[in-house]
Length: 76
Image (cartoon, rainbow, N blue to C red; front, top):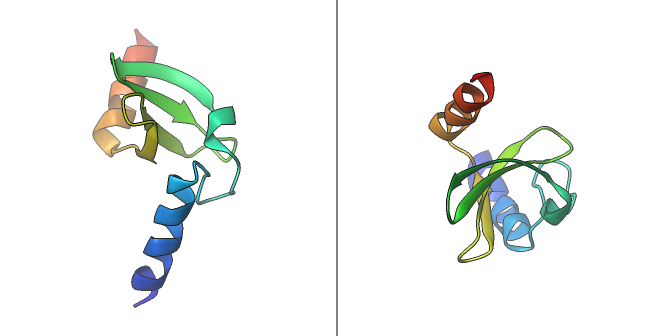
């Protein structure tokens, strides 16, 4: 039940391009790496990692695979 209440709020914040954790603007987030030509990984000041889709100009939380991709790329 708790997730049913929180999920729409988090989705609304992401549509406004704000971090659901700290409500900072994601346009101020640090760019970590480029996943593909149209997607970039960005990290908010609260250390949450998001995927920025350049085509649609939307944000979403990064999956564990995407975070691992960044860590392996960074280690090389």
